[in-house]
Image (cartoon, rainbow, N blue to C red):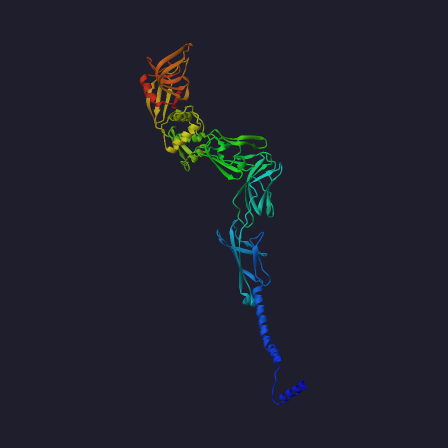
Length: 553
């Protein structure tokens, strides 16, 4: 058999020193014995690679309460450095509490924060995957804003203000907030239910997280739900306001729906400017001297609105504060219309229209002093600081006459406007302060006091017993170079004396004037103070409207 022969031959050759190899078997044995170390190495490399690429890493993510959450598995390591960075504060330290990262100092709302945490590994693992691992996270701190600046509330219910983000802390001005122990999406105001004005306005300062500073205040208004447009005003309608007071009107519907986009259809009692504060609110700022002192401020709307629970109108009105008597005295003293000066005890009122108008209703502190050391006691006794008095009345009349105004001793809008204009322009009175006093004791005499001295004295005549000259102090209200004097004699007959010279009326029909008599120094007139022509000519230039005349014994 061939196969048998071959086998014998092979065996024979083998015996004769030949070696015959089985190529296939030899190759398998080589890989079997030489490949085991290599396979083990490959396995180790694979395991190391898996450890390197798949080893548990620290994870950092946003947190619902804390600044961030740090996730560390069992073999991830332990944190050694934790910090945050903000543009406003720079580096901020962090604390790790139960897996949450909390800032040590307060952060601002809506601020970009970059967080960095470094984790340290130990042992063989640190040699394999590195001794430290740093993870970072950028986020923006949350901002809580009201869902709307306007809320309509069913009658009798508390006002509940919804927020876009839960609020952790809140400060409320204008009402009391019901406190909560955990973040809330609604702030309820507990003391405004059934408000008698059916509307309200509060300013809220909130923080979305306990570790945030309180945000910029926001204003929320509410109205009791009605089927018509309502308005709430600040200051309240009907209240007393200052001339420069800004008026704020908040509507229950958007401004554009109530007055449109052209505010020229809003009629005001003075010139000024309108500004849209928000979707529901307009503000009016009067210009110049603002609303008239002691007058009425008004705004007329293009449509009727509800004010409170019952009133519906298109005209809103406020009363304007009157100018202070004290400030009136201060200004007249500064301008030289009083026999006194005035000096502020603090910072002087700024030389601006706004500051001067504000001071008209809120006068600064200061001190009055008599301008002349030898001011007559009769004049001094008339002075009452901060109260109406004859010296003030005469000064107002003098000022009015100087400025071409009706000399009625009433400090109205025109008087205040002229006073403030003179103060700002530094325009003082051009004449010295003068005063006349008449002694009725015989011999009767008239004394002219001016700029601190008695500059002229003359005999005079006062009224007879049937028509006496009234005692007291009076302000000159009419100043004529000449005129016809009419009156009634004690017997009832009428008289008319034309061509009377140098007349200064001070009390009804009583006047200082020239009148020719054979003698002077005792009662002869029908109530007037008569002087010789030459004497009256000396006195008359010093007795314009507003000059005080005292008649005494």
